[in-house]
Image (cartoon, rainbow, N blue to C red; front, side, top):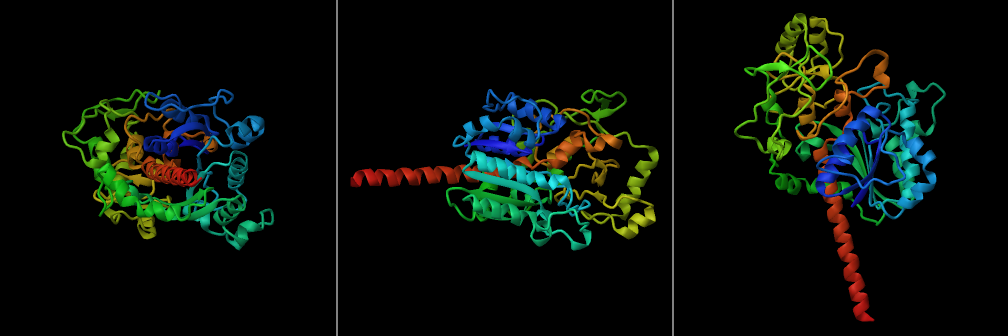
Length: 424
């Protein structure tokens, strides 16, 4: 099953599909930092390589550039792509953000639709935040927005457009924790078929036990944070200088592979023998560490710190959560200081957030760790790459389902052809 990944980020969707047995063809990502991580690991990686078209440069580009600069070449992909996936930028829809109906990033989903019309993939998967299926509030109307975003959700608009183009659409919310990801990450999926296969999303949810069993993961409970990151603790570990960030003065804990691994950790480690990268520890000020201790005492397990507690502690942040050791994490965001470790007075390392997103240890994050100021809008450092990604484990479940459906459809077609030939 050959696929194209649009709005690919650092490659969470691509990685899961590759692990399921799909073949990557192209990936479109605007941000150079995120694209470099994707290229390094998956396009030109040691474990995976894309069947990249000779006419397409291996470089960051927007969906608009892809459509505009390579319009004639795109026709060559028609009939050669089985699956198109993508997670259009979600900030305009997110209930955690400003939820701005005029956010220009909302229109990027329409560029995705233009690609669909040209390439006509057999299957389509679109992933976004839960707010993707909510209408915008009339109170936020300024007069410059498109009326349709107030009459129907963006998910409804896209689904109707896909149906007009011959696709059978199934859609709804899922929790990534149901597919082995140690994180309560509620996302909205639109899964489509050009061959008339209905209820693909329902098929995905009903196949979860089979998928989890195939990975050796528990089916009756979610994977916990402890199972995901316990081996990355820093307590009682030797600290050495961090060398993978290009900045001096940062430390990391020496990594010691555990003698016994949880099923989830075995998936994360695979056959990787080395220490994972991106383990740089934050440099917290003494006052910050003391504040983290107070937050841990004030917090309720797994819940964002209450408004009253934030006011007592003098915190301006709207959301900060202390992890619960034996439960999944809350949604991993692009802001590393949204979450505090369950038994260490610090935020998580980039590798710990990657583990919670289900990126395996061999997957190397590249570029800066964080950014700030005016660069927040243009740069995509490691923590941002991870927070924006689709968990690879969920993507693998989706890929496994679509491969099975595709094979079943091929077998059915062959059987019908044989019967027809026998009859003639």
